[in-house]
Every structure is written in C-alpha cells, then in structure tokens.
Length: 308
Image 1 (cartoon, rainbow, N blue to C red):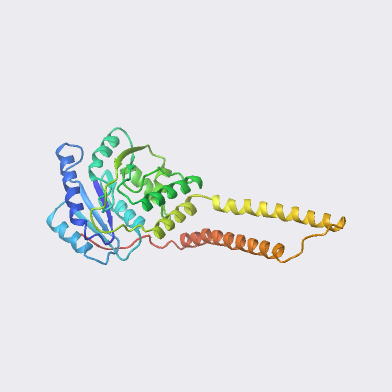
Image 2: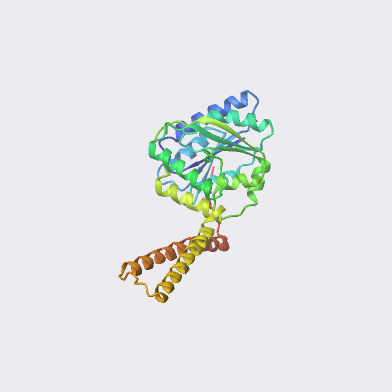
C-alpha cells in the first residue's frame, strides 16, 4: 500500500502526520492487512516553508517514507495526481496532510477493498469541527455540482482508496483541467463508501479559501457539465420570446391607436438587461473555449523537481 499525501506549506503539522500515518501502517502490517513494503509518499506542491526539508529528514530517518517535490505550485489536484501516478503498489490511499481526515479510517477502507471494491471513498458524516462558513460553502458546492449534472459523492473530497486497475484506468485520462472528485466516478469500477467524523485541523490553516473553493467548483462544472451552455440557449429563447411578445404588443398599440407609455425606462432597462446577459454568456462560452485552448496545448500537468 502507498499513502499519498499532497502538501503545501504544511510544516506545522507534517511531523504529526508522518507519525500518525506510520502508526496506522504499522498496525495494518502487524494484522496482515497490508504488505510490509507499504510506504508513505509525501508530495510537496512547491511549498515556500520547511515542508520539503522535513520530508527529506523523514525519508532519511524512516525507510518507508518517500517524497516528491514539484518544480512549482501546480495546485492540490495536480500534486495528488503526481503521487497517484508515481505509486507502484497494488493499493493507493490519498489523504490530506492536515489530519482532518483520520488516518485510522484506512483500516475500514482496506476491509472494503478486500470485499471487492476498487474505489473506496471516505465520506464525512460529521463536520461539526468545521466553522459554519466552511460547512455552508461545502453544502453549496455539493448542491451546485449536483444541480449542474456533475456526478459526485456527497461529503467526499479526496480521501479515497484506489486499486491498481483503477489507478491504471485513471492514467489513461489526460485532462489538463483536472477535477479528480468528478473523474474517479467516471472510471466505472465498483465504488464503496466509508463514513467517518471529520476532525479539527491540528495546526496551520486551510489552503482552500472561499475563492479557491469557488474556482474548484467552476472547474468541476465546466469540466463535466454542459448545463451552463444549455442555460445560455434557454435564456436566449426566453428573451427572444419576450421580445417577440413586446413587438406584437407595440404593433397592436400602433394599429389601434392606443397610447403607449413613453420614457427612458422602457428603453434603458432592456438595454442593460440584454447587455448583461450577453456579457455573461460570452464569459461562460469563454470559460469553455479557454479550457479547450489549455487542453490543445498538452502542457505537462506537473513537473517533478526532486524525489527522495
């Protein structure tokens, strides 16, 4: 088993993470659930603090700890992908470094894998440790994604187990615009869920601010759903129908000599409304066009600078 841990400026919590994961792996090895060669693979996503120095120190002291350092900050999803693609074992577990997802849940994931599941997703059934704003934005995120037709497992982030066949299937997906939470369910393998209570962050601060959460949501929607484009079509049809109805009314008023209300309101408001709709539509179309542009260039999704 390989435990992949993406890290970005996690020097405050990294020692505790390594210690706790090592204890979990030691227990699983002792019970015969995983092989003795199981490893922890830390992926440093271009951290500016002492994260990489700590990973190097761990690797020298602990034989089952390895590390990858990316050349710059590529983003959480790409750091996670780098770890998944470099893992060589039959089972790969991904978990964040902040210890909010308890590593002890891995034992239940292994049990689900032994029963035949190729993908086991950790699902949070208790988020009271998170602040209200965090819970509210998370609920908004999952609700919005569901309404846009993106197939996600509710309350599941990136704490999951994947078998070797699932990893090799994921390797065939070459998207530059990466959203693993939506991509993994597309693989088609048997998926099971394991529930757990989300814990409070041990140290440091969350790297997923509200702007980043919104950006992740926009990326997920535009990577897996055509609903925004169809909404533009629907909006265009509605506005055209209203404009046609207004034209019929104006013609009838002129034919029958009825007085119409004069003033700038009836001109300016529709102008601003239609202008706003056009700009919004262009923005949505531009988002999809930009994604096509990035995919066409086929740039590397991550670059590994060092490994230990």
